[in-house]
Amino acid sequence: MSGARLVSRLEFLCVICPNGCDLVVAVEGTSPPKVLDVTGHRCPRGVDYAVSEVECPLRSIASSVRIQCGEMPLASVRTDRPIPLNSVFGVMEELRRCVAEAPVRIGDVLLEHAAGTVCRILVTRNVERLEKGGCQKG
Image (tube, rainbow, N blue to C red):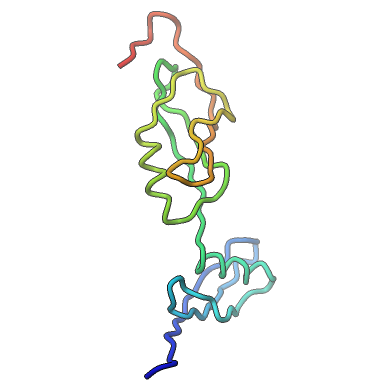
């Protein structure tokens, strides 16, 4: 039967504002999926959130990286912007392999274009360098 389209129904809890609306989203099963209708929102941001989650989901990452010669073995890091959901595993793999040398400061950029994305990986914790003699590279 030509002309028929597959429409599915998804349910989301909107997390954009404190209302926490229960959204019901009608989605056309194309590739990529297309939002046809959104109901249950109490503000216009709910529609934008539903469309983003279905058509181009984004996520922010907060993690840690190893620190060489530092007073702490790890420093916390984050992406400077949300990235496509399908890039999260690639960015996490780069973070797993990343080793920075102390000192690192809040706001330092450890990686540019992580896993081919437009994001930068920023340090969110200061880690001082160990005194001379206490650092063994390797």
